[in-house]
Length: 338
Image (cartoon, rainbow, N blue to C red; front, top):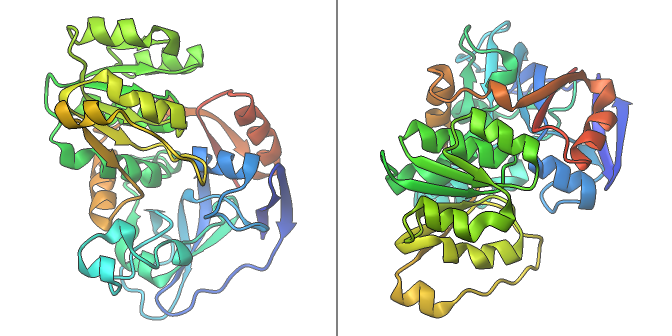
């Protein structure tokens, strides 16, 4: 089968590799659609601690079951499925505390290789985080299950309600998914980003206000009546933006740090503001099976419509051209079809 291998930062090779055979509990999926994402771009540009090189590349996908291992009863050959690339072990100390997204074995047992003709889905993922694709959902839409699950994890337990103000920093694919989810809850949403085309997309998706970062202070003040946002989602992973994020929420507001900073980064926050204004500062990482189930329902019922986030569809053999576009800031998410 043809598979994209990330050999080192800036270099992707297309190789013919053996089609894997599913062991007990596993399924082999013929990939129909896979999606690019910000983590893929980071790995391509500078490497990533959680994406080994050289190694198979890509982790957002949907496809068709073509073979299954012994003991798989939930799916049959020919089923169209949507999945994420990981699942908790259910046995470690964190799993026993129900902190499934912090599972000690989560990252070491994930599956990569969505930019391939076939992908082997491990037993623990099959058991917890694979779903049959609804007929009304395209494979490209279904492949959004993984990134939407991450966004759900960081937002669902905050209690955002109609009329709340939400400020999203970063109008990339993850920022736009935050926008869609916040709007589905009835929030008033403002978003900032560097690319005007992405801000135009944000407006099409329902953003109440979008603006260049240079306009942030005035825009947030005017939009919130001078008090600041109820909730802020930082989606850039830039340390200086992490640090300034607490300036844009009201007293008692909550800042969610979604964008991951480069390894070893150190950030500083105004202690007086955090303490006396009772600012909530939260990190968020990955997702739980409960988040995946929630994201599946949102996509299935079209409560979240992701179609406007797809910037184009390309065959797998044009993956280098796709990443060249992403490097220039062109587009949002691209579909690769093996």
